[in-house]
Amino acid sequence: MDFKRFILIFITFFYLIVPFVTAQEPAAVSADETDTNQLPRQFRELSLGMSLDDLKTNLLSDNLFLFRGDRDVSFLPAREQSLVETSGSSFIRRAFFQLRDGQVFIMAFTMNTAIIDHYSIFMRFVQRYGQPSYLDPRAAVWETDETRISIERPLTVKYIDRVVFDDIVNESGLIESSQVRLREDFLDEF
Image (cartoon, rainbow, N blue to C red; front, top):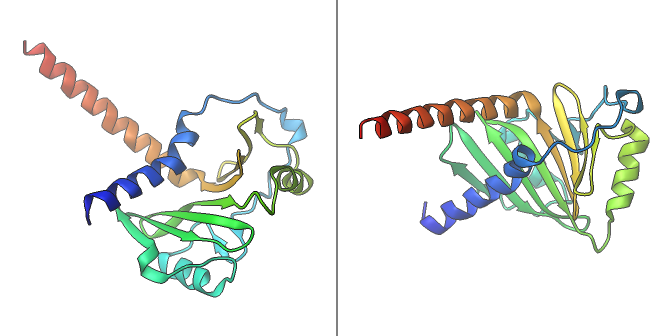
């Protein structure tokens, strides 16, 4: 893999992950106002937990996406991770699917704001799933123990498998704490 492609994949990965990790906790909406027991883990025939082969098959058969096959699949240097990035047609401008151990754990859909607006999508989610768990000017978030769905500005809808994502965050914390300890041990040698 050439360096430019690696950088593109790296930036795309952090476009999907960093806002989730680094965002300050938005103001909470009371639990009484939230009905998130039935949060979807699926959009059309695409779902969290599906295999790479099923994802490719479903993208190829869905006319909402302009998937070109394996050319749109990249493998990331992290543990058994890959990224599928494809253009969309009409309502969806771009779609990103992050996989770990061969299963989708993030689906992100950047919408075409020329034909669909933030308010329409937000109101549909409120009608179906109740008030968001968190709400601030940047994002509305619905969350259960298994799933997190966010509508982010200008207009991206993200589905995240919380179990897998929390595992990745915990692993990165362990790696970071180990690196901090090694750094301190090295500095103590002076």
